[in-house]
Image (cartoon, rainbow, N blue to C red; front, side):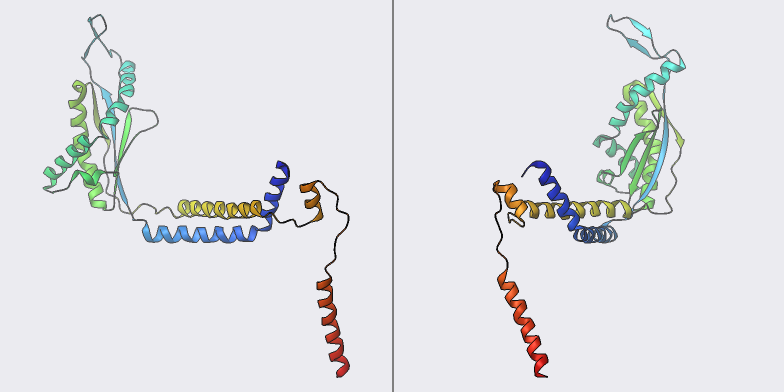
Amino acid sequence: MNIDANVQKILFAILRKWKLIVIFAILGALVGYFYTNQYTTLTYSSDVKFLAYATDGSDDVNENNSVEVVRSSNTSKMNYTRSMLPTYITIMETNEFNTRVISDLNEAYNSNFSSGILDGAIEIEILNDTAIFQITVTTTDPELSYKIAKQLETTVPKIMKEKNQGLVRASVEDRAIKATTAGSKGYAKKMLFSTLIAIALSAAYVVLRTLLDVRIKSSDELTEKYNIPVLGSVPNFEGRSIAANSAKGVEGYVKKD
């Protein structure tokens, strides 16, 4: 059997089993809904936006050890800031940064949090290829998310001032606000994902069953597989005798009455 015939066979098998695939899709959606409802925890987010900017009066040493004043215009300052911003973002993704934030947080609120609460809780992104970056804090407690975001308003500018001789600094552009509602559990996304998995599994089952089925179901398949002509076929006498006997039984029963 050639490749095209195999493909057609598989497609026809999938079409014949469309009800099975639909059933699996429905079950997959139900599983996704149940999992989301039972095992997805509500989260609360607070975010704060910062503007990064370059400072004046810095000197740079070139390869010839001669000193020249750099970033003499607003354009050069902006270009320098944007080129360095990913480096500062990377610094804010380190364990040292998390430890500093939690230390400042514990001191400000007289608390005893561990730096582990920031694992996976902070997301940092640069907005639209600008010098503005946003830090989003997401936890299961709206109060904790807000406190961490508020602490970042103080700690982040301090850290940027301390790094790289303070060549790039940050100011708060949009302060944190306490979340009043939880984020979405993502029912639609998770149900769609589980539905697609169910469809893929059911289709794979149909395909494997079709490919592993070596039975010959027609004379055309016999001719195609062994390249020999079919001279004739044996009728199903057993089936006919059963039908005839059944008819006789019915006829005798009618005559008896």
